[in-house]
Image 1 (tube, one colour):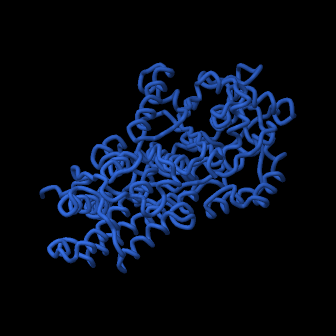
Image 2: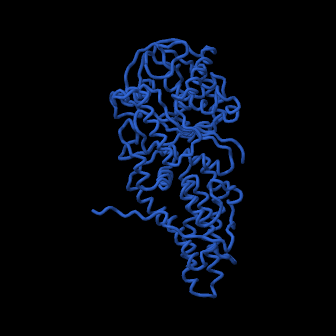
Image 3: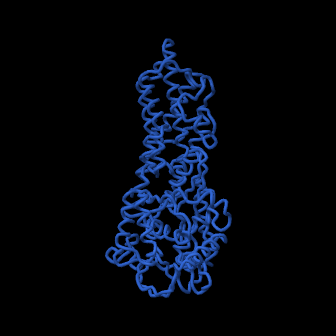
Length: 518
């Protein structure tokens, strides 16, 4: 509903190395969701940022021969640069070294202590240095971390005196949460995984590490540092104003959706709601767990070293095009293999030959046959009706919006590009270039072109969450208020373009990619 608040976050990224394309994928998905809700008139707050208190950040800084603070500042800046280059419309770029976050984390811990949810004990077991996570033997695959199978030394056996969080105290309430709200974790496959962990039973978990030099001090126990995962999760309430701005926090919390990768679903879907329950704070409304991008048969990740540079990718295909290619080629709800070759093919098929060609030919025909103005439509023909039906379906609640709201971006884009396909079929059937040769067909010509131009306008507005710069450029060419500021109810209907208003052709949006010479 217009005016209703919508708070969305990404996971915060470790800064032990520079960002990769898989980070841009998550940021873009969350950004598309934020822009979609803004476009529909909702009051949106969008947070992303960096996780800077991890031990592996300190280790990476030492290996680089840098002071830890200098190292994390440099890498946090690289992640912020990525967001800015990729048009990620965040409202706050969260850093876990921020002073308000340190205070928020310590307040959480004090609340747990006051509730009797924290006790001192000894941890003896397995720890993945790559995940910075504690695991049971049953969590491993052939003795290796599920998410870092290529790193034989990632799993270590540790023995350490830690403070423990009484996760077991909240097992019953977590079961009730999933029974009452099955959509708390989506998609279904990820929810079933979480339910499997619940069925096996929970154990209390370490909430501190001992004798670390980098991290947030455990209240009243300076020899302990708050375990990084408990520190990191609290960033979501810090950004919403917890402890610093009660009015802001009351407005934005609970979060409407956390967008995360499947390797951290245990933390977000079990630990995080329990942590909030223990602190007397409402749980978020939803956690959406997206799939992995895979390249050369392996997950894209920093730990595997299988990386694609997101800045170079944006330079190769263009920022808006790369945003589109990722969300269309790799459905957000599942793992997907990608490659430069597949993205090239998708670019040429969808953007160069599809959308770009449609916009260019429509505007060119308006220039040639209608004095660079919006045509005057008459009685529509059969294919005009097909185009309008596709456009009106896309604008309906059951069309694009249902998929976009559920973070099924590939499906949402399919609905938009069905309009593109229908307009191309419409031109094949009506052949405006032939109609232009017969003065008696003037009304048919103008109707055919009005249908195409109006469809292009609607496509441009629908694409704004995914391709904000290209969307704005198309709207400027066909006429209408800028997508970022347009009132949705005004532009999201058929027949808005006014005959005689000027249109203008520009340079091609997506020049076709040609294969490199052999």
